Length: 376
Image (cartoon, rainbow, N blue to C red; front, side):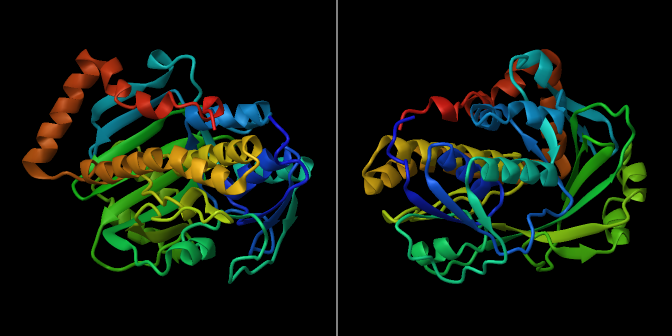
């Protein structure tokens, strides 16, 4: 670390994963950080997320690795199944990437960890702050998500594309001896992802193709009976899981372009504000964490702010675009029908049996990335 950030004032809009991680990374470099959050309390709706090694490297560098591991589970594998529950392919994380850490964590626990660390580093988090226009500060970081005020200021009004897919999210009680792995059940026009969380919980995300326009965001409650009806034909443990759902939320999945303009020398976008992604690569939180570290590193190593922000955008744009494109592709692959589905599942079964390392190796470009080693 250099001293370019020492004593500099930074305002961050949004106290989600991106904003809080940025607050920690900047405050640890002696910046004076203020986070503006519209909510009246730091809280998250009940949901889980997966953190891959590219994000864990940043968490470790921030000194939060031990606590993160205490409140999360180490994922051992990702198992792909068809709608009946029959195995299609297995990505054995422990066997093929034994030195890497994949974690399953409740989003609320991650937010609590980051908020505590941000305050401990000296950042001020101001709640109940409705930011409707960009602050006039010398450096403003827009970490305010899908409806980012800062993104609108930099790019104008944009209209996202409705994917004709909606998703339910729920957390249910789980068996204490559940295997710490993610399972993906793929059916025609729909799929369901589930994995356990620390504390005897299980996360469910179920996606269905449909033409009704649903509100974007996670806050719209829905009747669990609708979720059970949509996945009534699924087998394996899915019926038991769905029977345990007492509360669920639904939201429409929209495809946003990666922002055309990330920064203007004073304001800069990170996380979902810069590159919203569909939830089919489990990289939304990871990209936000990567962004936060690299932005702080650029600002700390380059006294000229305009140059630092331009360097940050250069370092992040192509990777973000590649991850967003990969998530878009998975949205199609999970929902294949007819002969295409049969052919794809057969190919996956053969690859899983005869070349399992190569199957997971397709994502080496994603998981090998080390944000901490990036030179600003």
